[in-house]
Each structure stands twice: as structure tokens, then as C-alpha cells.
Image 1 (cartoon, helix red, strand yellow):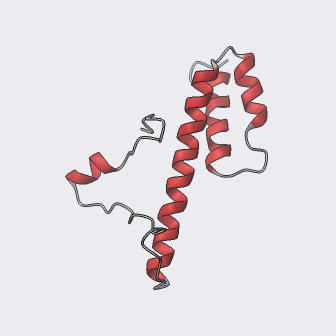
Image 2 (image 1 turned 90 degrees about the vertical axis):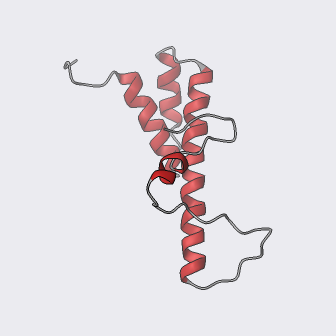
Length: 107
């Protein structure tokens, strides 16, 4: 393995997260088996899945909000998604990474 190459377990973890975040039809299931084969703990796999789902869901909410605003759709308050954070300098640093529902940091 080349010195600059990533360890296969890291590649499998990145691939799993990307598959989940992208809603890929294969779902990253083969990566889970590879990760288990490398001895990666179920807790670590669960954390990667949690973070990937959080990023996927957050992106979907932000796209939905932007669509609703641009389409000038009226969304009922109980189903409305909070507006996406805007880049306003210092406050963006704190808001750019929200923890998952399980409390895992995504950055």
C-alpha cells in the first residue's frame, strides 16, 4: 500500500457515509460487511451512519426550505423547516455543524 494511500477501513467508512448521504440504492451495505471484517466496532459504524443520515436529512431540509421560499409556497408552521443558516461571519462558525439527534458532532 502506498504511503499516501488511505487504509482500506477508512475508504470503506467514507464510502459507507457517502452512500447513505447520497441515498445510493446500494445503501453502503457491502461497506458495513467490510468494516466488520476490519474489526471496526458496531458503535463506530453506528456513529458514521448517524452522521451520514444527519447530513443527508439536513441537506434535504435546506433544499426544501429554499424551494418553498423561491416558489413562494405557504408552509404550515407546524411542518415548516427552520430556515437554512446564512453566512454572516462569526455566527456561521457555530452554526455550520449541528450535532446529530444522538449528539454526534458532524465536523
